[in-house]
Amino acid sequence: MSQNKHLLSAADLSAEAAIEILDTAEGMSNVNEREIKKLPTLRGKTVVNLFFEDSTRTRISFELAAKRLSADVINFSAKGSSVSKGESLKDTAQTLEAMGADAVVIRHPASGAANVLAHSGWIGGSIVNAGDGTHEHPTQALLDAFTMRKRIHGSASTGKNLSGVKVAIVGDVLHSRVARSNLLLLNTLGAEVHFVAPPTLLPANPANWQAKLHYSLDETLKTEKPDVVMMLRVQGERMNASYFPSEREYSRIWGLNADRLALLKDTAILMHPGPMNRGLEIDAVAADSSKSTVLEQVANGVSVRMAVLFTLLSGERVSDAS
Amino acid sequence: MSSRTVLTSDDIDRAVTRIAHEILEANTALQKSGTANLVILGIPTRGVLLAERIAAAISKAEPEADVSQMLGRLDITMYRDDLASNPTRAITETSIPAQGIDDKVVVLVDDVLFSGRTIRAALDALNDFGRPRAVRLAVLVDRGHRELPIRADFVGKNLPTSREERIRVQLAEADGTNAVVIES
Image (cartoon, rainbow over all chains, first blue to last red; front, side, top):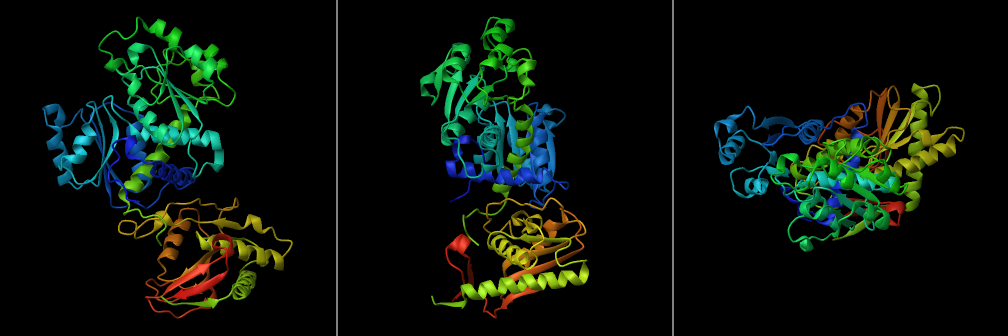
């Protein structure tokens, strides 16, 4: 099996490769539970977090993941750097290359930024896409898959895929890179994906997407009985037109409140990639319920990102060689 | 390619039983009893199986001791010194007995002792779990060619080999048969 040098899209991962990352993350999560939460694996490697967009959990998660593997971490955010003086992505990338970065974790408001960085030749290290515009966020999809697998299979999850799991992704699908990456990865892992959203918040040509579409949340919860309900954040910063009449209406029709929480089956789990708009797409009752995996997702994010960095940065991976 | 069996199933059983008794004897010199404060950690993949067999042999010799509380496994993939250049293996689970390893006598178990680099990695890994009273090493086969100042305390068989030869340890739990084979 040949190994990818970059992680740009959830579509880059075969089922085999994705399961391998999830299994590795399983081992990493054991490390995160012990007293000395550190491995010497990436000693001497440098990981640059290149963030052109605000982020709390993704940046901290990548930083913690790299540090737990003993890599050196440089955090770069566009605010307060030469980017605000007008430096281009190319010059920034070449600067990082000159300083010897082994991996660059990039978040950028423009879709495709990570792809440009990976294939332009400006930089020799591995590129990890940590969110590019409304395109993709593959590590989020991996950590969501990891969380589902853990909740469904418990300690016996190693080696398993997600076949037969019914996942409803609800809300602002149009602007959501999380939804796109999740759709690709969940399909690869054998899950069944349903998009639930008002027509204004679904992408143009929704028929091209490998997902079933629904235009009513109540209807979907009642008839489909999903195993996983993933609420998406309403992305106010990308709403440059009126996609829905008012926040109150959105919350009434599309928000996960106490009544809809009661419609979920007992084993169902409720996910949110964060940050949550409490009272808009998700109510406090639901967000803090035992079905909610919001904090598990954050904890699993560190393990999954450790697995990704390990897979990309440690030698050519050949299965079953000794 | 020629291959030659150097240890049969019976030889392996005898070696495991002997190692178990040697571990008990050596531990008696240090502790109140043969099994007091003893922790046995297998190194994946074959080392884990051998550790289970050694624990079973100890349990046979000392029926009142609860060996399940002593047995664990230690994955050393993340501590290897050749991760950057060599093929890596998928990491597997590490489980340390609930009692921990602080002030315990830890016996590491592996199938073949060769360069000593795996054991160095295991020693580093142990460091992150606590501070044992002592660390011992038990191996089924010592084939020489050490690259580090490491030696085994309990050896099933010393097997002088050339570097080009390959030692294959086969255990019924993983390979369906019990044998140690030299291939050249």
